[in-house]
Image (tube, rainbow, N blue to C red; front, side):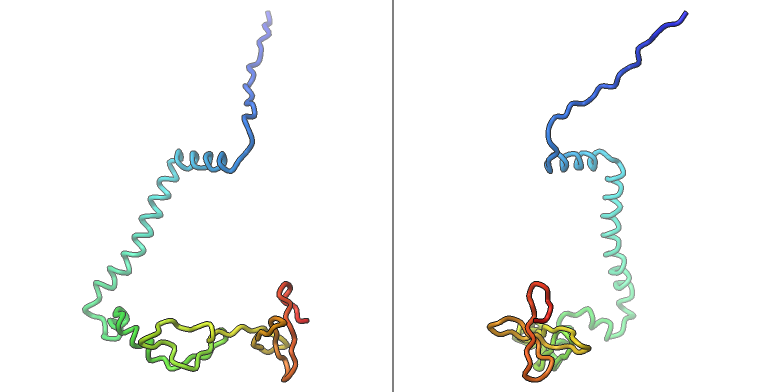
Length: 155
């Protein structure tokens, strides 16, 4: 004797609305809140962040009595400040300063006037200057090549 049994059907969900940023954020928040591994990963991250800060501090504190005077001076803000005030000038690619970099009155490393903007052209670093027509470089004396602000190509 044979019997015909009906297969169970799965209920289909009806579409309840559009996908929105709020619904996606809510579903992600629910996922993060309900997963046990998220809590463990967050706890491990916090513990490692605190641990990475405490370990070097404890190492330095334990060897403080055996450190040299120069090493101890690195921890004094007044020593760092006075050393920075002794720098006479600095010449680099992006910053060129021909006056004391730090003074007792001014602790900014540079001003807008000290900054250089340049372009590498034909194997040379050329300063970018500005006039009423826009930014330009001078590859040779008296010659101005303007820079297109959208493509940065020379005009």
